[in-house]
Length: 332
Ligand code: UT7
Image (cartoon, rainbow, N blue to C red; front, side, top):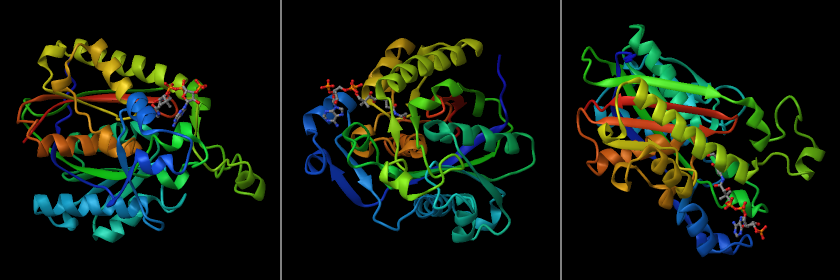
């Protein structure tokens, strides 16, 4: 069954802050080792934003690069959807800040919170507005400054994440042979307790106590998230192919969320695709949350691993739990 929604990605760009932090650098901060991080996660280095550099800044840089590459004016953008769990502030939305910074004077927009599945969710949401005919140019951005919520006394989480942003442009298509074919998303709120930031919301507003108890940082039960991510990503990807009458042999590239190289390899084994068909860049960026998939798409384009007509699967699991897969035929 195909549920093509007449929207295609016509451009992709990304931005990571220049500062590179290696595993050896982290050895000086927490009780860890380059060997542990590389073998348990696949991460070699990641990029960190300097203090004051925000998700809207990274997202703006990615959006500006995208507009420049496409040669389009910011006035042409109809809608900006920003996936992030590290907004500059709880409000206004990061989308408003980016809209102002790039001068997208006609656009409306909003933020979407789905953690590591955020970009896939935002892509599906943005595509609905294009597919329905409501909009012609939608910017979908994933941007996170994870270092703003990392506890550098918790070695089990602080080594995993990095900062970055990616952006894609969605435009209409009339061809059944290009663009988004199908999407599938779900949430399982029973997993919320395994990956969360306890304070800063209405449950535990910021106080001296929340700061002293280190509640404004990422808390994770890594092993629980690991197992769920492997199982659910493989299930979603397999179901997506099956219900579209396709097999893993038809896939040109899988662009999975980059949380852990072992999660990616276990997922791809269940899906039945070899390394050549899986985009991996976690070694250089770590887990940039909403930015991993657009950064993966950007590098796949740069490395000429995507050609017009190629079948591409995006797949992610994140805090919530949130999960999603998007299937498309590459359009350029
Ligand atoms: O994007 C969605 C968000 N996150 C994820 O998908 C992450 C999912 N989880 C994971 O990637 C993995 O569970 C981790 C990388 C977080 C942890 O790997 P693991 O193989 O599940 O390790 P573990 O938590 O079972 O810990 C094994 C050992 C422990 O020591 P003991 O108790 O065996 O003595 C940890 O204390 O590794 C220790 N450890 C570390 N050692 C050195 C944990 N973190 C570190 C570290 N350096 N950074």
